[in-house]
Amino acid sequence: MKVFTTTLQAAILAVACVAGGPALAQHSATDHAQQAVAADTTDGEIKKVDKASGKLTIKHGELKNLGMGAMTMVFRAKDAAMLDKVKAGDKVRFTVESANGAMTVTSLEVK
Ligand SMILES: [Cu+2]
Image (cartoon, rainbow, N blue to C red):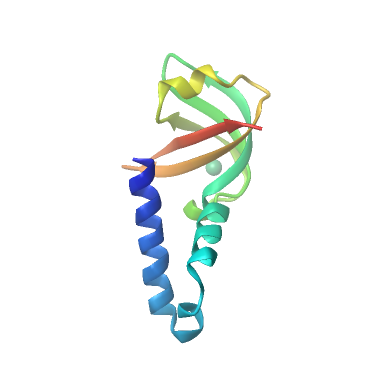
């Protein structure tokens, strides 16, 4: 799923560059990779871990890929194992995707 998503984002960026015209089309493949990471990974702080419902409450920074500003909100965890490796108060770096309208944490790393 992670590999698919990354490939999809690369494809979207590639299309955006073509649509953006000659100036953007000159960006290198390295530029694309860096943009994808910057837009995709967000810093946050775990506020609550709800193992019963598989959800995490996270105070997060800006989520550029979702057009969302900083706030505290509840996310679904893609993987139940994510809930075991964090606790309230942990500073994390994570990735969120909108899956069928549900904001889902797809990767999570304690800083
Ligand atoms: Cu939010």
